[in-house]
Length: 321
Image (cartoon, rainbow, N blue to C red; front, side, top):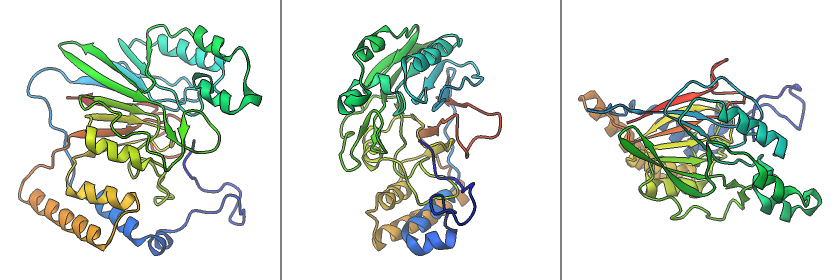
């Protein structure tokens, strides 16, 4: 899946119109645009450094779509789905072979909506695409030392600590692809174990790393996943799906709560008063010397795409403290 990008076919192409201006966005959805501006201009959030021990270096990639970018070494490598374009046995096996050649001690992978072979229910819904060999081919995949998580958890020992990772490929319906659910259906409620250190999902949460700079009001993330994050509160959330790679720090305070409420389309004037008061209060405390400490890092790690990572930079690295 890709984020909306500028038209390459000229201004008059009705199938790829130019993105609206900020003024047009403000006219259409003043609550969301105002909330986004306040959220983007809140005081800087700092993840505290550990007082002892060595941080776990997590290397994050997603949406490689058959590409094999250079990947720096680290303690844990996470691929958050869409290894392939067409999801065939050959494509998946080539990606697994590449991942197995990398030096990371722990390699965790989830599927994405393009990785069709890994979702046998997709072929049940689309019998014309089915083949009697699909299930056999899926069982014949050589995973090697790659750990595949499909709505399940795994524990991984890194030096003197245990890291708990939960991974799920599910995303809201977008076309006819694998591992998808109707947008109004809550597939996330109470699914993520509260002890989770790292959450790996293919899609982002609503309002977080799910839009492009050219079309900020087109939020492609899941509102149900957003609510579940507030309950589970993992320390790191890695996703992809929307090709707009970047990093966000989160702190679970009133400013974020009211911002998330607006992103879900549930905001009222009272919500905006809360976000404005929280924003002013946060800056006052920051001016008085209080450090705005974060408790979670979110990463959209999409390798391919038109916005987010600088040219030649194909991976994001997070120190889990």
